[in-house]
Image 1: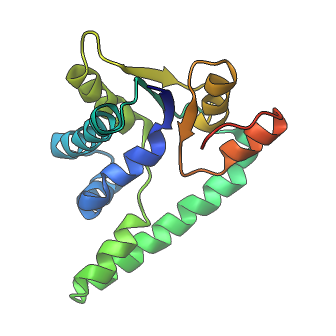
Image 2: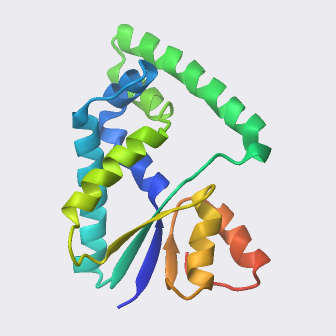
Length: 179
């Protein structure tokens, strides 16, 4: 009977793990197909339903990342360079018949684009239309600070994330909350 705020970007990444090669190759060409959107949306809907039905969560706030933080531009650039290197390696491994190693490399190439997030969330909204206990929040920047703010404001009781930055926001606010 509690409310949780979820870092939707971590779920977005996990949602395309099973189709990492298809997603990464399509994204590298500048687009993706509707199949990738459906797979991702089904994953997120299933996670929300799991929280609501199996764990008795009263409401779920899906918090999406906003703009990239300018101070992290160098880190973002380095990550993009690493993704490109991993993509080259994934393609080599696939070509040499090392399917499982290639799949692991493709997973390390995943970068969720804003347009993809919008398309997926549109399908998730459709799945939870009406009086659903699933709400959508667009963070102005990265979701971490917004997740902490939602809890600090008393809107949610806990945060679900894989990003440890939210712990820093909790510490900075001198308020502990379940993560």
